[in-house]
Image 1 (cartoon, helix red, strand yellow):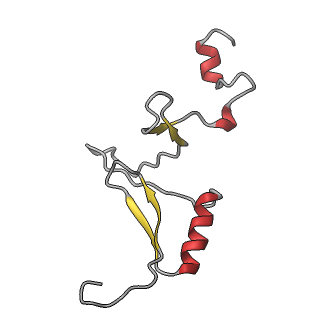
Image 2 (spheres, one colour; image 1 turned 180 degrees about the vertical axis):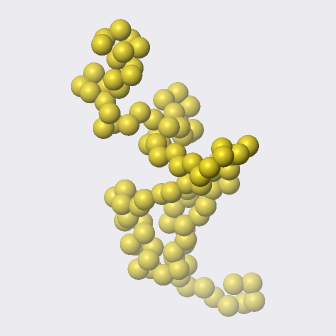
Length: 103
């Protein structure tokens, strides 16, 4: 510490959400919580909910429920990605297949 006290253990930062934006830090206060939270993030057991600020008034409460993943070219950016449950074996959604002339 700054007043001469000795800190022997500092659990620390578990995860940095949304690096490059205003984001948030997940910090563990104990060794047990550090272990549990780290494992939860590593095993993808953490559900993340995002809140956005929009310009203008959509007129009512709007919920956008879309899968988010890495941008295919700008790998440090995130974007809405195609829903894997809507894909077929070609890797295209029904809308993409129609646009490509396959149905």
